[in-house]
Image 1: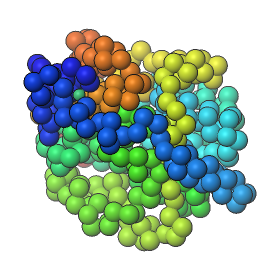
Image 2: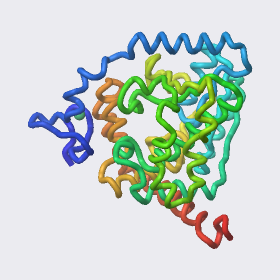
Image 3: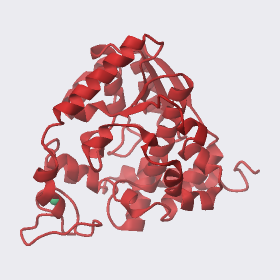
Image 4: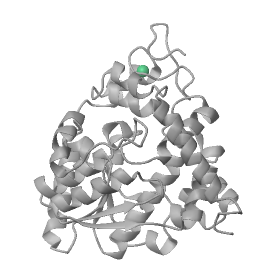
Length: 343
Ligand SMILES: [Zn+2]
């Protein structure tokens, strides 16, 4: 398959063209649209949000979406040790978090002396959402360009869960460990309020999924109308691309917190076994890799070399297939009538 000679996007990636020099349209437009460093305005906004939160002198300054993966573990360290924030780490356990990852979580929150909550929603509901998200085209194309169906659903459940807890506990912001490659369209995504999108539009994104699973799916994927009207509404902040993302620095710091790389996940995840299943199914459905965009963006930003990105997209590694098959068997089994919740 032909890929852009500058980044790694394949020629069949939706919405792009590759010119006679082998360069994709995103790379051609890149310098014009993206300044190389986050704007000073964003850095100023981040500092003023942190100062405001500290000045409130409440129990928590921020809820941190803590997956136990490398990025959110590093984020927790950055916010607690370097910025001195009072944090509530919240983990959404989707039922497929690696057991080594739970050990990492315990070590990290204990090293940083941070309060930690693990949230588990009904697993039968989660399994139904993940299966439908992986097996059929339930999401609009502008979302599936950027990630697998299971990741889209899971990230949305994470955001809804974090906002709900922040609203309940009167915490002014939710912090996410997004990398610069996970910033999809513009820097506006780094600090924003999720309720800028009207609730009916938000629900529409999940209509096809809810049709297949049941209307209860909306409760996990979107806030309620009452929650949407909360004022002040919590900010969602992704600090890593603003303060500077450096994977080498992350891997240098994490061992001191007792964090080590789990071996029972695929190479592109450091915490979640569902990811491998999402990758394989996404490639079957859409014929491109769900990480194509993220990797290409990291190359454009100079965070990753093209060779390293290609290596990360290479799923010949048997672990991806092995983990994906184990997860698929588990998902199918847990939702069947013999041993599923209806049994
Ligand atoms: Zn390109």
